Image 1 (cartoon, rainbow, N blue to C red):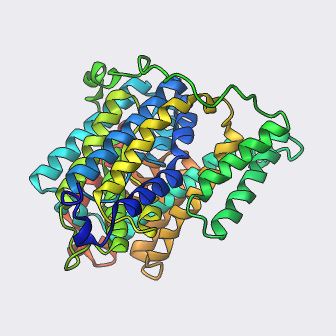
Image 2: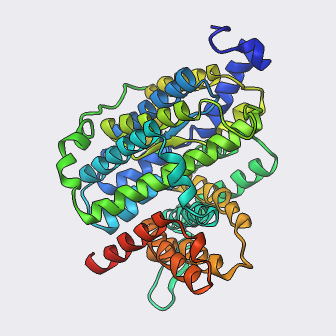
Length: 429
């Protein structure tokens, strides 16, 4: 095992790798409760989504550890689950079964792009600023969803939005959770989001805001969601679903690439500014999306929380193997779903939004041709309650502002294709 994972070459050992794997799991364990809480809004069975989340994370992370041998963990991605639930199913009225088929299709396309080497061309076609804008916009959208779920922000007939009822115990619990989580992260506690959820849950139990039904229980059945993606695969061949699949693919594509580069750089695994075994890492990621869709969850992707494990010394794929093992063990803790309410998960959504919004600093706001499409991408996601709409509007304005600015040569042909697709999306849908 030590030889397979190259412990000596990487300057690590079994104890360090185990500790790193556990640290990574604790840093991202919140997804086990946040993902079912989001996807239940579509009508999906919460217990089945919990099981699907754990399985997708375990399989994806195991593949990353054994095939690519990187200390990077995977799970259903934040932002992509919000897009799945609120934009596709609720916003567009697409059945969740068909949406799962769209996730499956995006995963299969991702595999083809990876195996054929076309991924580099696609990555290079999208301007870096627009990639950053998409990530930041999704962050604002996720934070908005969290504020709404906690009823900290509510609808207002006069101003559209306003503050909620701060005498509501559940609202106060969410605010308490947000403050605690902020403090923990400010103190640089790696698993601050997860520990914040635990503390908030305990306070909720003490004040009778949730009901305790035990800690360990049987694994929830996958029957309500298992195989639905395959059963409804024939429903994806529409222009509306084409836009959905492209969005799934686009966000996963660049989220994964960004995470791989960031975590690998932190671990010192980059060589000559290139990522060894990048193809294998991307294959593991795309295969995890296919597995996740098959069992019943939104797009599975690499988690930047993997950096917490790297921070304590994780360097090899064995870190990922350990993390995968903990996700499988977590299958037996489904009773905790009943006490992890929206007031508990909302702070996690808000904080993840904050972390994703940091991408705004990398956008050249002095370049008007870039600033306009980037800003519209970011702002239109929460305002239209649709990640796809934000991407579409930004990608429509990009070639327009670049052309009139005399920068036509900087526009990749792929951007013109996306321009036509998104214009057709608004005209026909």
